[in-house]
View 1 (tube, helix red, strand yellow):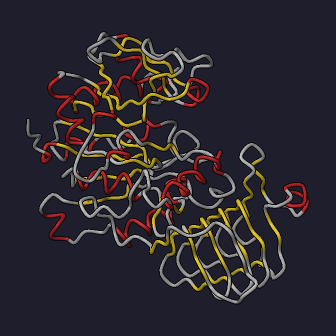
View 2: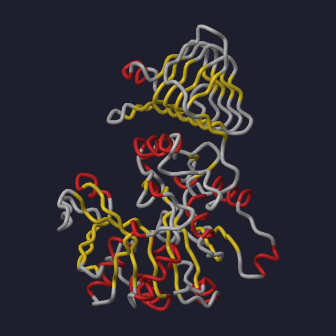
View 3: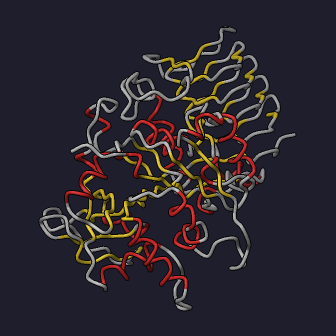
Amino acid sequence: MIVDTEDVIAMILAGGKGQRLYPLTKNRAKSAVPIGGVYRLIDFPIYNLRHSGIEKIYVLLQTNADLLSEHIALHHNMSISDSDLGRFISPLHPKNREYGDWYAGTAAAIHKNIEIMGKNSCEYVVILGGDHLYKIDVRQMLEFHIQSQADITISSIPVAREKANEFGVLQIKSDGRVEEFREKPRNPPGMPEDPSKALCSMGNYVFGRKFLEELLEDDSKDERSSHDFGKDIIPNALDQGRNVFAYDFSKNVHPGMNERERGYWRDVGTIGSYFDANMDLIEAHPVFNLYNRKWKMRMPPSKFVHGSSEIDNSKRIGAATDSLISPGCIISGSHISRVVLSPDVHIHSYSEISDAIIFEGVEVGQNCKIKRTIIDENNTIPGETKIGYNLDDDRRMGLHVDTDNKIVVIPAGFFK
């Protein structure tokens, strides 16, 4: 079955505050957080759509949106002629603050831009989250939606039950029809075939346009609603007896995906998951491959692999092992291992850095020892600084410490 993507528009929900990613989200939207050195989280849903042949893309912005809007304009802007041909990536800023804090919920964000659906005369609407790391051919999900005669299709994936209370949890029949949907339940039900896991929503949906318009109009008039897809829209559709289906994400396979990437999905919602997602990119044979020429993004960072994890700075030799190095970086007589460097980072001599993520424009002085640390922008780390070795010392210094994952975060501008 071939889906006519001319009948499809996509809306990316990129307005999340990302409170669990604080302080990385203090002055930027969650979707604007850097990842993999040269990218931001928003790049991945955009490239997923474009590789799927979906070229009518709206990005719904909310808090701290300026940086995100600038990034889209710089890296994803299309020409006027592209727009004339029906191909565009358009950021949508909130039109008012009726609900007190931009939009009341994810459904309210779409409803406030409901006229776009009619303007584009689309038959289907794809809604994606703007802050997850994965690869998907959206056309396959659309094909499943059409063949199932679904009103709503929800991309789903098994998650360990102890972590499933952070997501919408589905219970389904053998044909994939959703019987029950519970948003962030305290005690998630296990899957019949594997009780240790729960089937969770990835926050990616396909709707028939007309049905979506009806749901959003009804929801907007409900004073009891929180105007959220997971809490209100999907449960209401089930109450109406509508056809809601779960799409098995693990069955999505395409040339831009290697076997290890099949079913790979990171909800980069916490400091720990963000750190792990970056470390996933470093591996010699990564579970998520930025270098697959059949699934191209813009030029990925340089990569150094198969290095020793042992650091020996007895000699003044710059070396990077098992790391991603972005353009404009200087490693001057120091050794880094399992590090992701954003552009324009300068690391001075005799420093040792391991298992770290360093944002754009950071400078690290001589003889520093840093491990399991995320360094945000506009920091000049003084020489002889030691971070990540004693978390109590790091707290006393005023740094943000994720105790559960033993990760230190240096907020933007902390070291002037």
